Every structure is written in structure tokens, then in C-alpha cells.
Image (cartoon, rainbow, N blue to C red; front, side, top):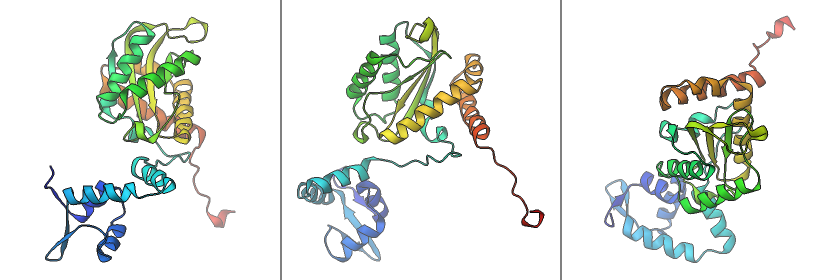
Length: 251
């Protein structure tokens, strides 16, 4: 919509800037804008031209900082914070994943991720996951595989996200001892720190709760989703329980 008019808050979201920064640009008359009564409005077509010229004039470090600020989304990685509700939605799950081979499972998991409209570079994701599996399988003896690309870049995804597929039949995916795999997590992270955090958390959930057994009998993705979120909370409470506060008078 080339003639769209943006409000200040819409422009802040569009440019990934703070509203206060935009007000300062308006005050300095450094950004295209129009005043309508007490409201400041921004023609999108003029904003696009202004942003392009400004970006082309940036130094390398400024461009890198802008790119990270405009694409990378922060998440609370503290011990007791539940991450899965933020990163795995109902449309991120497939209860009846098709595929009898490793190649087909990977392709179908990439397709599942693409259907969320959060993947910006489908081909890079596919290649990254395939290269990672070539090193050694991400399948664990417990029956789950933790698929992920070999590199993690902000430009690949709108936000970090997790996908989960339950295959219709057991798949030989390379787990130790020749164990079969039925559950395939696809971890799509914008940077290494959250990737390592998610890898550890999902691994612990699979190993230390009975969620895989529960989800084996789940009727649909809705039930699988509920079970998975409950398992994360169970794991968190197991490793960092909340103790009742002691009254200072009793010490």
C-alpha cells in the first residue's frame, strides 16, 4: 500500500525504533511527516525513501547494529522462565508427520516451519539442517531428534521458534543403538545463546519427564501442545523449586 499513512506508534513498529526516537527526529525536522491537528502522521512512501537513503549512508558498524536491532528479538533465558509458550504455537506442531526416511522427515519439518510465515530463508534453513545432520545425527535414544541448522542468524527468521512433528511411524534417524525416532523438534534460533539454551531445555524435558510417552497417545496437536508446556513447567520446578519464604522473626 504505497499511499498508506502511518501513526507514530505504527512507524515505531515499522522502523523498529523507539517512539521517543521518532519524536526527536520530528522535533529536529529530520524525518518526513505531516501534522494533522495534534497528531503527527507519516506517509509510508516518503518514509521508505528516507529510510533507504539513511541506511545507504551508514557506516558498516552502524548497519550491523541497525540490522541486529531490527531483526533480533530478545527472550528471557532465566532459569524459571517458561520459554516454550513464546516459541511453539499450535500451528508449529504436526501430529501426523509424513515420511519414512531422514531426508523426507527433514523436508517435511522445513515445510512445517515455512507454513508459519516466520522463516525468511527456507533454502538456507534446509541446507543448514541437512549439513548439521551430516556431522552426526541429532536423534537421542529417548525417541526424539533435535533438528537445527549448523548456523544461527537473525536474518533467517522473524523470531526464534520451535517446531514439533510426531511421525506416523517409527523412523531410523541415526539414534544410538539403532533406536527408532518418532518425535522431531526443529529448533530455529536467531543466535547461539538462545540456541544452546533451547537445546539444553528441550533435551532435559525429553529425558527427565514422560512427555514423549504422553504425546505418543495424544489425539491431536492441541493435546500435544498442552502436554509439552506442562512438561516444561514440571522440569523447571524439578530443577529450581520455589521454596516458601522464611519469616525474619523465625530466623
